[in-house]
Image (tube, rainbow, N blue to C red):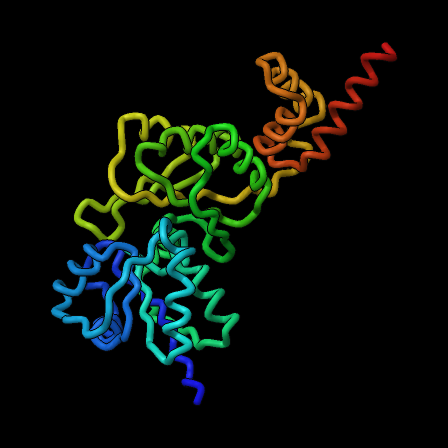
Length: 287
């Protein structure tokens, strides 16, 4: 007789203050057949703080073993187990392990549910003071400078508010790259240590925030950046757009990259800057 499939439970855990733990979390921790934890040591501290003694088997489930352990957990789910997935903080799958397991469970028609919990993305967005009606989460940026800048330029014309995670030792470099890709005057908020003792939200233009970060910043970081504004095309005429592209080219930047950067700064489509550059080039030839 085929066993009735179990249930995969994605549980949100506190991002700082343990009192933010939802009541259902303690119940799930106490009754799950299997608990898959990103860090078993942190899980132990969490259960102790909540006064919970897990009855089920505890296994590690992190980036390094996610691919190998997923089949084992799916097998347990197919056998009828209730598997609880928790990460170090926040919701599983949101820049944390979980996506592979969810996808595998869905493929096997296993029920997937969640215990809603704290989210650094939504908390930072709400505290930022920036528009919240439309936003997109971009996760962590690439570590290499060139790849990071390229990724940022891809969304330079994005109208929605942008939310990023970042490591404290890379914050200044990231803010510098954002200032270059989006313009130093673009509004942003750096949120660190959310819900913890030393919580801080620093708001201001990207250029100013980059200077502030040069002094060194500690803690877990979430960066919220204002989307591209709707500027009238006449604010910067074609001559000024071309001049800015030439300045960047003279500094060693490739034309394609220079056009993308100027378009981001001016808040206009890249095609508009490209057309202005082409027109100026043709005018020079015919002069």
